[in-house]
Length: 337
Image 1 (cartoon, one colour):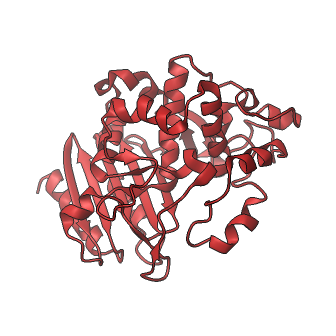
Image 2 (cartoon, rainbow, N blue to C red):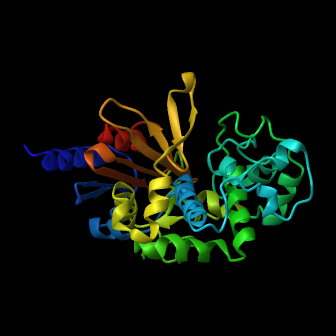
Image 3 (cartoon, rainbow, N blue to C red):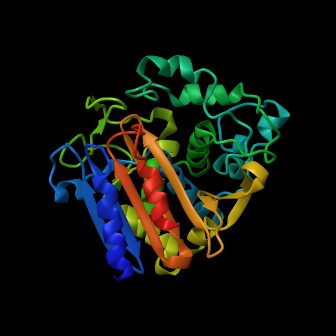
């Protein structure tokens, strides 16, 4: 049996073993693509394969690539203090020492979310917790913040930090984040089915479902956290995105930035065994690393990963978040190792 046939069998078996209204597993190996769809919603396979799915925190990899591109062009520097590009006054020495590099690599010392976020989010925690949390409120939270650790000394995952990075980028370039991402990243990669806002058309936008039920969840609204979780994309676009990371030379306009986001940047985890690049989690194996990122919104989940040594990329998308039982993200990760 060929490796390609084995991969197709594994994808089919994995999809059949999930309990998700709409699920897509897509793989690219050596440039050959396979897409397998399934689920309990009754939607036909071609419709599932062409929907735009909410990828949640995987959006951070797009923001990191945008930052790398702007740094490669000399528009911003990774070592730029965040306060240089944000409308906040002087604060604590730790806060003012936070750089753009610290924000994207989760080493800023900022918490996962602003301290006032939870009171805002709790009434809508399982539907749209970020909706209504304004940019003004985010910047006020940053102005008052005191990092939990000295920037650059500890890895602590932070939606707060990457959201701020998006606003710092727009402050530096004086263009809306969506326009920057489209012009600098999406257009050069040819990602025509990727966007930051839903179209509101069920034939285009995948609709998420609740954690423990079949109830539908509203389309995700990231509000001030656009840079940390707003991207929605079709499976083919996401494979194109990963293939560009596997072969940076295939996209000359972004080659330097694509190479930059593959380089190890910081170490973290027990015994400092794991690596984080400018955008990706990286796990090391004897025959080469796996780079990946997962994400979720209240009603959807996503996984993107690639392995340069085997020229393999995997995309997993589902319209239910983290239902107990078969873990879609673990299934996808296992396809790479």
